Length: 109
Image (tube, rainbow, N blue to C red; front, side, top):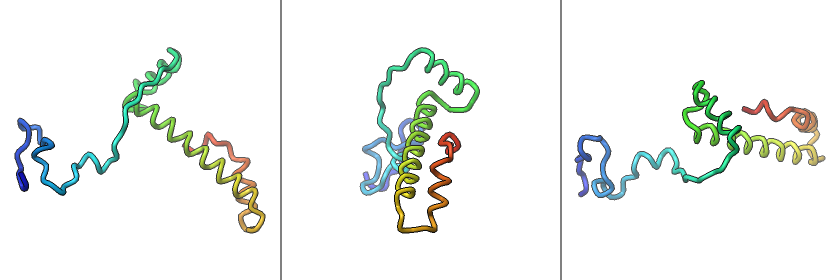
């Protein structure tokens, strides 16, 4: 059905059979996600829920995703600082590596 503009019951979204061949659905542009199940202690769930209730995250999944991204950035920053600290060939970066090694990782948010 190439070139169709029909949508499912006025929802504005095309069904998979209505999407013209060669067109990428708009939801793919934002990246696909994968659902996982995680068991957490009650105290952590309450902590997450408090942040969601105060509008600091849109959902539990949003809060957890942001926390994981923050951890990933910390690990990348720590790895980069260690690489810079060990690289003796570029003296221009020595002071940066020394500084980065002393910076607390909680300011990377």
